[in-house]
Image (cartoon, rainbow, N blue to C red; front, side, top):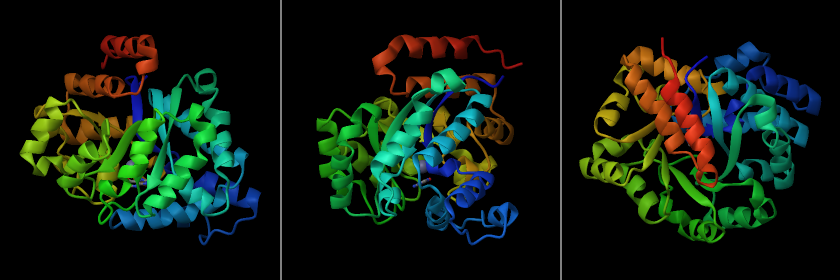
Length: 330
Ligand code: HPA
Ligand code: ZN
């Protein structure tokens, strides 16, 4: 069994495997512009974040009913469980669905059919984080937050994703203030393609508690020092970084330097159906490409639970952490 870990950076829409995409397309009478699953897999060649996002949004057309979202989440949980995931904080993109005429309630209720019983079915505790699309307007984000109020017992926090460059965190100051007032946790993608200044802005203007990606902090030593001092977790996604060309090869990934600097790094899968692997695959990949030893791998697993939003259940966190310490890597 792989080392126990928490998945903290996972877009549920990014777990849509080609086989499920075609099955849902058939079920819903949706025409996909690909002959078959092989043809679709051939389209998984990305130049950058935007070229991935184009396909990611296109394939969402097959997600229409509560059952579709439940099947999507169940399929993810099964794969995650097999890779040692014990706790998952799962992103979803409400605006990508409401813009297509799929109601927010359909998305949340559908996901909840799977997540509400994930401990019994898959041995994974789960939480939902609602992301705003940063290339949409601040007004649209605020409307989305208001529309989500009936479902807030199922949503632990808010995040910010989609095309980063040109859409700095400060654009969403108001909606993050409103989210904080509702008691929601706050995270944001920053420093994936965008500059280190976006990381600082996410911390100072949006009050985020974790930074998603945050890779480009390494260009700013003062920022690294701050992230270390304030123990701000970074949710890194190594296979994603290679596929979206934010790093050249896995062997060049700054993860070892980031750990050496004392940053609270975690390893996650982002959009595993598109980027070549789930959480355990990302652990295996960095272990091999970067030669990480047992203590580094244990640190990454430990960090994932330290950085989890488990403040409501510290007993559970302690249990997970004990599993990590007891894990035998040989
Ligand atoms: N970055 C930004 N937005 C996203 C991503 C990502 O890696 N995956 C899904 N939406
Ligand atoms: Zn992401």
